[in-house]
Length: 423
Image (cartoon, rainbow, N blue to C red; front, side, top):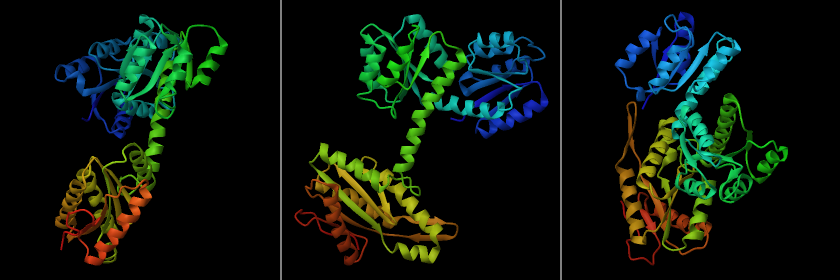
């Protein structure tokens, strides 16, 4: 779903610039130059279609923030922009349930707004858990997080919080008070860190106690950050966003390190890690297949490397779909690997044979070029203790498949399935 932004701004030059900024964030813009115009737009729209409203504090028919109240009452998150920098105006804006406010005098307004809009869309998939404190404190934090579109959860104690963490893996941030009925915040953080490291879950500790040692104790126990209550609205969101983005950045780094850049499949290193873990946990019923595209060098030499890349990427897409329940990898060049567990040898053979047939029937197209390609497969069901042992046997079978004439599956001889199927 592509969200819309309601932009309420009366200044023509600001309106044009803001439209470009919002457009760069890949969001549709609906503009209004007055509160009256905004009300007419809402009569013909549903609030759910708007990611948020970007509202000028002072409009010709709403000189004191009335447009902010209207958007909030319409259940749309509000970002306020204003040319007024007086303290009383800022306090008045922040007393309302707004996402944020941005002074027009700030030279970074447009970059910050673009980041904020992108963040509001991402937050719809991010969970945040608030733990402990009294009901009023938790509800206040819950309200602040909801403004930023986070999926929010509350837990009165450590035991309930642990259950929520296990049930909702999309929780990326936990905010815990020091005062818990069944633990202390510091002890709870230490226990949580036994199961979730800082790359999986950010933690912010909070307290209203003026104890300088408490910050250090939270950090030493595994918290990423600390907030002393009462805290400023803006400081709260800066800390929250910083800690959520930390986890996301680690995820991006891991994904980049573990993924083949061309096909998007897991790379060889990540594949080894995944499969080794499964072999240790489930030593029974596993099969490994090495797959190699036939005469791939001829494709590159005849049609060019761009066309060869298309064949590799399309083959990878087919693998993702066909082996969706299995571990797949691009090993390098035109070679791929699949690890299947909880399948009998007969089921594994049938699965790779169907894939071989699908590849041989596939027509790879680019502009006026249309070619077909085949794939050779070596398959083993060896009861080995390491992935290296499995690969060694599968590689021998792949060599035999190539020698036999390609476009076929060769597997372990003790099984009663046919050794080769294909041409």
